[in-house]
Image 1 (cartoon, rainbow over the protein chains, first blue to last red):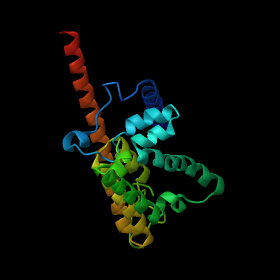
Image 2: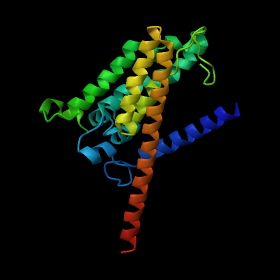
Image 3: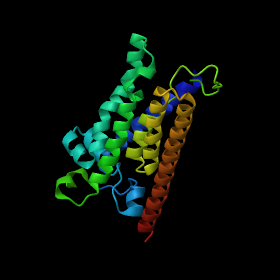
Length: 134
Length: 97
């Protein structure tokens, strides 16, 4: 399993480097973080806008602030945790991956609906939805 | 499902094809591109089609989900590299002024 070991090493290195970068530097002030291509082209927020600032806030434990930058990114965290833990649970119980929550149609369609609704609402010039904007 | 396994009508695949959902979500959030959303659309189709017994359709949706997720990922990487080059040029022009 030489190939998968290389993959794991690359993944861990990139993740650790990224975490250090986003912990050490605040995207609000630092100029070297990439800007959203969708926002640059259209002037509209995409579902990911604010995710770099949210990541910085999350690494400093400020979950509320992170949610203010990008609610979707914070809501996805439990899904990511689940993804990481699911193979462990599968191994422990001997249940196949096909039964996983990520493979239930209602869940995937809900993710799609949530993303599209979030995308629409954060671009509405309405005071109530303004906190969804980054 | 092994990538090199031959899907045939006589022996339908037993495992669900990979749906790329988490990868698509990550591309949507961190690459800031609609390609990730295309990935989520196909991810949802993988599950629905497999449950409806349409194994060929599920495999096709899986391939499409993977394709759009990878397009989003590599365009995102390219964008980061372009941004880094522009930042480097701006920085050096400030230094050499």
